[in-house]
Amino acid sequence: MMRAKLNTFQRTVLMWNDMHPYNAVHVVKISCRLDPARLKNVIDSCLEACGLTNLMIDRNRKEYQYNGGKSDVTIEIIRGEEGGDTLVSEIRRQLDVPFDLNGEIKPFRFFAMEEGGAFHLGLIYFHLIAGADSIIVLIKSLIEKYMEGERSGPYPVFDLYPNNRCRVQGWSRYLVKWLVSLPRHVALLRRSCRPDFDDLVCYDTGFELHSFGPDDYAVLVSAARKWGVTLNDLFLAMLLKALSPLAFRRLEATRRKDISVASIVNIRKDLAFDNPRIFGLFLGYFNVSHMVPGGVDLKTVSEAVHAETEKIKKNRLYLWALAEMRVALLLFPYFFSKRKNKFYSKYHPVWGGITNINLNTFWQQADEKPPEVYLRAVSTGSATPLVLSFTTVHDKISVGISYKETVFSKEDIRTILSGFSMDILQLKGDRQ
Image 1 (tube, rainbow, N blue to C red):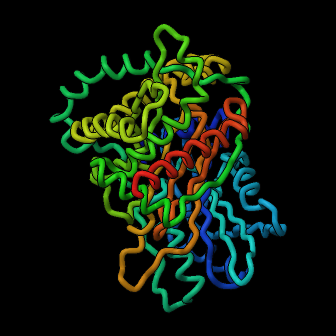
Image 2: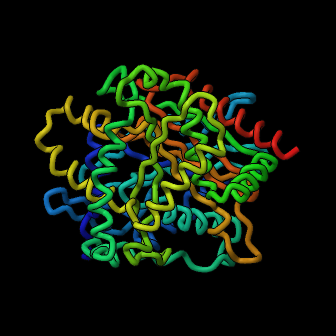
Image 3: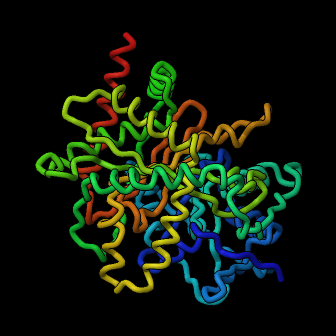
């Protein structure tokens, strides 16, 4: 039986999951009628064919393996209420429901909700097993098999056991730059204000959905091109500006006046795992900080963010995240429960993070189009109390917003979304 070592990010996810369920949710709208029996058969057949059944995790040896065999998923049928917010409520609920990690693990759950002649399929997975890129390949296959049957071809053949012991490719070229950047990185964290936690041991998750329509998407893309920044830079800048009213206490501080936010980075290429058939979790992250003074415009913040992200990408400083996670893995066994929950809020004061995926790139064939609706959500975990999952589909962007209710209220989330709307209105006004 084959097995693989848990990589650093996977071990960190396992550590976070001991404090609170660390799940991810993908929801896709399928443009045909729901047949529960047929859907179950497709899902079971797919998971069995891909070998994604009966996961075992050996904590002592830091290894995992899929035992394979029969899949027998239960698809929860959700009844939507007219005018209600059933889908949002279900995503929120699924983020807080843990997976049973005893014995053989079923790392997937599913729900379906009818909507007219179509339905939403929700896939919930234990985040340790994969990143969003692997799950999108899996869901793409499920959709094709459900809609086209045998005409869709075989299920994907995944490599479930990548060599996680391999080193970062070309790491020696960047080592000096990483070491030189470390003092500044620490200084930025020490200048960053800390979010206020009402309760460090309560991880109840809130969730909201937001979207940018075609007009909003066009103005965002236009602004990014005009200013010479990426859309990811623009999203980070918008988040920094939107958080500014909620972090007003920093203005009275003598030292911690900055706001720090994070961005998830796919590090497959850095590990030479850029084959999409390699199934797993290969992520890093980086932080950017800004004081966000009153009255500052989006262009100024975006350009400041871009200056930082260019340095980070050029020198691959996002790989420092692996070293930071290893330090946390070494320290956590020696911390008592309450101190574990306080660790990130004290030493890594990040207000929010973003994960950003353009789904159009996963449907690259000329005769294929992405689904009309694709939503994502990620548990907040221990490292950040707010996660925004940006997903671009066609010319629209959906944003799944998960947050710790002990840090942010619904009113706070409305303030953040209001900040987004104000930035969009300003950009539209500038184009006229």
